[in-house]
Image (cartoon, rainbow, N blue to C red; front, side, top):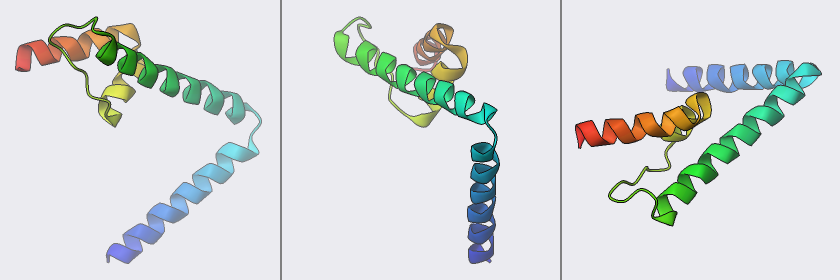
Length: 87
């Protein structure tokens, strides 16, 4: 059963990539998304190792990077606020 699900996942990813790469508009979207992804990861890395955030460290995980990609600077504030409240 796992092989059936794996085959469906691989097939759907391949078909999604075919659809995205065939359209001209998708190239700009993919470039912007990649740029935002790299910028968010670099921003979190710089904040962690510059010493600006005393006592806080934001881990570089897909969840934190995607939060910063979607929300921008307020996403960093959201993560810091959650760390302050939870920890």
